[in-house]
Length: 100
Length: 504
Image (cartoon, rainbow over all chains, first blue to last red; front, side, top):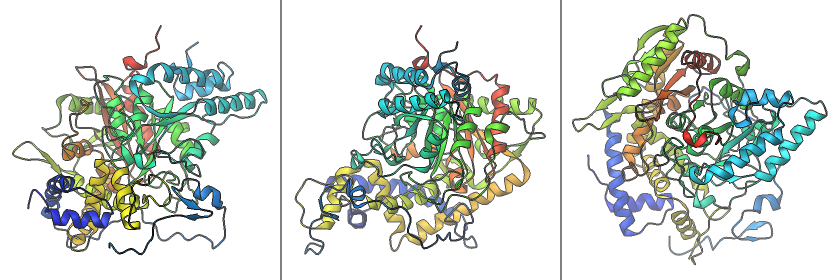
């Protein structure tokens, strides 16, 4: 049980979460996450071997909608908040890069 | 005649229907009060003055034409800034959505307007509803109307401060781990978290999808019942909204529950509980027994609170909650990518991954980043079983405790918050201390059950005290009736902070 998680792991998680972080931020994040994760260790006290996981509070089964077209947003409405656009498309930098 | 702001939502609704006051007069009174007083409280992130006056004029025109005005006809209310509206902005108090204009309106908001309510504006909150003091808002700090140097609680801090300071007749908030009930407790108003699925989440910006629920904050229990009646019910746009009949909560709330069995949660009323809050729970219990209820001690072993050697509190429920909620948040908040809407970095980036990572780094505040990181970690390969899966199993143990309890009693009684309103800045340095503000509220969200916080007078320094009542799944009717029994026993005196009193 450590009070800090190492910077390499912080960097890995930050990459998965798509959040850029400076070195100083990663160090601070590592110690904060470490303290919180130690707290989570409390759950290990409980024997849950025979317990079914509960992902949802109500016993819903799948709710299926009819396969019918309902009211939809127009292209203008859907792209009204787009930071950058080209007619009815979102404009983003190149997707296939060489950095990742 | 009583001034519009002095009336409960129910009384105001009746006065408007009877023509004693117009919707326009009532709305103007609230807008003027916001103008005068919200500079100090900062409950609102946006005020829709023109739109509100237009809506009020429509209500008055409908009355003149002899049409029915709806159960909230002309009542001025506020909504939390995480509910989408096709007008104004929907910011979640985040830089990443600072200029976001939603293309549609949340179902609960639509229902509120369909019931005749006039929406005054949107209220401040912790960014993406992550926090217990509203200090995580990227837009502004909200003050507690009872003491401006203290926090209003959170995350629905703006909603609670607004109701308490008489800057709206009632409000909609959202509750993922206590975000309606804890601020209601700290500001001295009533806050109800309905059963998961009772109110549609369509158009509520998602934080943790298996925990989030919209609910009312109000001055008293009948007003909360009135608001719930307006917003509850099934919605085809939300597959998790329940197709379960909605009772007329407002019609039955004044009827005491015959032979009410009340469970005192043993784990919540222990030695470490603050003495004044403990006394408040005892006072509420006495109101119930005076009204004919019987008390039983109930144990919720998996909601137990342990005190460490150094005095720090720990609980399975808090640990479980912060894994489940952050895991769900990390997935929900993946949509803020700088590509489709919201903040995009102005920096030149090499590729789309950098665009995402840089936009998110600039747009999210520290607590939101921390929770996304925690959730991502808990769901990541190698840690999933130890953290996320384990938490889901503990969640079942917590929910099973409640199921067993409600086999024996109708409602459970305990504190809402471990303390009264704390000073701004007191907990911002240590995220874990802030998380413990929810120690009595979060197991309710994990189990999906409804719960209500209601004020029980003031402590020795003049700050509101509160208790919480809990009921089984879809037992809102019984919950509200039991809460009303407490309120009546207390004498129904409403708590009005200095900031909410009409200046003479």
